[in-house]
Image 1 (cartoon, one colour):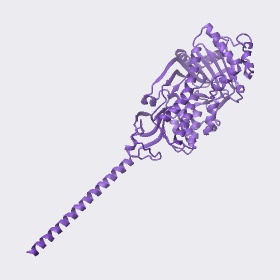
Image 2 (cartoon, rainbow, N blue to C red):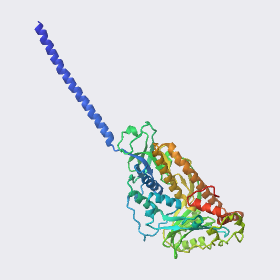
Image 3 (tube, rainbow, N blue to C red):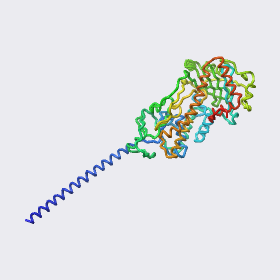
Image 4 (cartoon, one colour):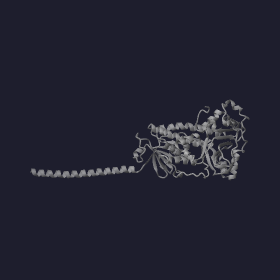
Length: 508
């Protein structure tokens, strides 16, 4: 009996052992399968190749490329991963200019302060290889023959007042500069369609060198969708996409501004002789500027009402050249006299010391003999974003502000934005601040808003002052121009401010 019981117990134990081994093997297989499945899911997440960047610059024009070039030049920012989003095919092609090519009518007058910034990042050397024109003198007068002033770089112990450069040369030089730097950039030849700004869900930062990151850790980044189907993420999105900025629109930034009901006609003209002076004459419908470009070429920027602009765009070349010479010299009114009241003694008590240009007489601009480019027409407006920065997003250049072109300051304000933002980003990295934090970006905004609004107010004031043809007002305008000509402290301050030094107050 006992033997029977023992045999039954042994059989049961053996059966249980087999079942146990089976269940253990099955469980192990299920666990192993689950692990393999989990590993596959993780690999799938990582193999999506999510494009993650530190900075996404939307807009690869001159201002956007200036920011990229500045970031590539500083030790604290040159390691950043940067995406540049712009459909302009010039970004993907090698820069190549021929000196014999006709000048492009789209030019910029860059100030000595901007030139210094370009030299600091190594971009100016590329500009010097192509067509450009320094000028050391500027003459400003109005059509009444009453108001006149001239400025000379020697008045502030400088060699130049500025340099006129074709926009394509400025842009190409910045691109060449970036290509020759060790800089992690990716150019997307596309346009921005949508932008999602995710709230931060974790205090942990992310490795800026990784482009494959679990989706859960992307919540504190901005997501950008492009027209070519690409999606990318960035800690900071920079709107450098012009006056009709898509970034500004998607981020919800409000703006203040108005249209001037004026258009600018721009083109390149040719002279028989060279031109080394920047000329500007205020006419009843708006100013006309003649800016040297080198090789006997000059650029015309002529402001007028929309109907006149379309008429002058379509008229014959000979008629247009006659109109330009008429506007620059003998048309609309007489040439200025030496002083409002016949001599400059009325200003002698404020003079302090005589500047070189105070003793210079009015000069007649060089005569235009030929139209050397197409005529282009642009509407003019003033626009200012109420805010430049919010979490993960910041605006620079025309995306933040547009101004009247009468003093050629628009692009210089944009370059000032770009270099100031790169410096603020570097300062944030130095102290360990997330570059998308609004507190950091507001430092940039505070710095640039004052400079931009001040210049915008000055230019808008000039535009409004010269938009009314009224006898007593004409006398006041003429007195102001003569004061700027003969009052040395005022003249020096105006030149310094226009050169980018921005010294305030005016009398210093």
